[in-house]
Amino acid sequence: MSARIEWSKQVPEAYQAMLGLEQALATSGLEPSLLELVRLRASQINGCAFCVNMHANDARKGGETEARLQTLSVWRETSFFDARERAALDWVESLTELPTKHVQQVQYNALREHFNESEIVNLTLAIAIINAWNRFGVGFAMKP
Image (cartoon, rainbow, N blue to C red; front, side, top):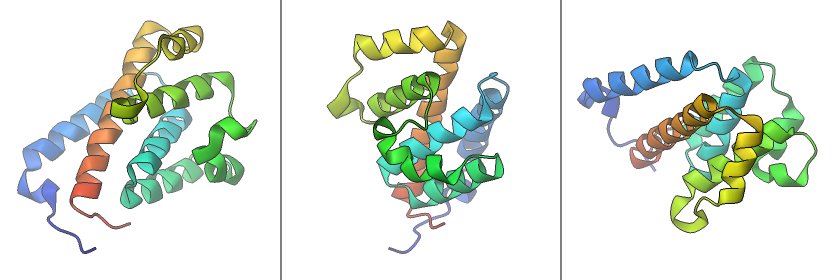
């Protein structure tokens, strides 16, 4: 599939608004390593090759291990992720696959065990942002 349009050049105001959300998230206090896992997992689910490549590389640069990157899509089947990360990854999957997964109270309760209220809001913002980026990446056939 060939690239379609460079959306960021066509509507730079929207692109700048997205970057503004990213800047807000950067000061949220959530661990950069957790944010990269969130971004990568949502991008895997959404099939955004551009974002999967970018966030896997960013995670590596941030010190993420190959074992964790290689098994992120099957995180439930490994012992590589701690309870906080597992709660976040479960939240990612539910919100990214909202029409079919739905958010269960048990998932929210797990978040409450590992995140405070502002962290839950910021984690949800991170998921919303990467899902938006993925729609641009997939919709406009962006290539890594």
